[in-house]
Length: 218
Image 1 (cartoon, helix red, strand yellow):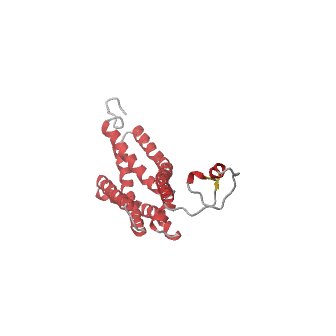
Image 2 (cartoon, rainbow, N blue to C red; image 1 turned 180 degrees about the vertical axis):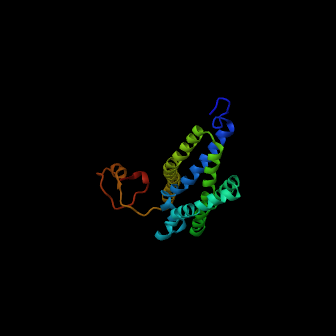
Image 3 (tube, rainbow, N blue to C red; image 1 turned 60 degrees about the vertical axis):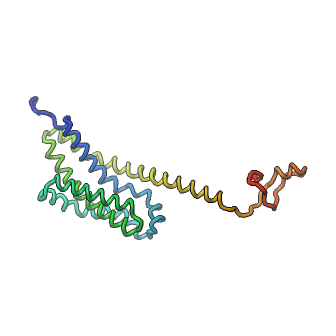
């Protein structure tokens, strides 16, 4: 780069462009792994079978890999910026549909659409990156960041999936606990040591139900 040339990477426009393109790359690979930990919960809530559950993961990867070359060709013919926006719109709508899905069919179709949207915007984003940063040094830095994002996104997907599933499980466990405590409990054999001591008898295991949960010792 000559001294008279301005740095695109260090300008506000260049920084925002790179951040947006890296976000696109991050979302593409995040959706591959973000459902992995949540698969048991998805199966339980939506009634998936063992065979159909695999489509939650494979459906996204199938359309993403299958339409990747087509997305790149469409970016050349229609325009990379237009295809980038179109892919983002399709990806966002499919993500919303998947989040609101109440049946396994809707979720699988949403995952297929997500993969198609990612296949449209990924090559368009890479094309925008290579044409925006024309300086060799800046382009190498941008491509290095682009190549590092998939690993970060894959690891983040597993972590975020565990956080979301764990949070939901915690709420569900609390609700179940409250329901079990509020519902009438079956008669249990317990040790009513307090009643035995107050009556002057030795504490022993009684076959009679305790009158209060506080008198039971387990």
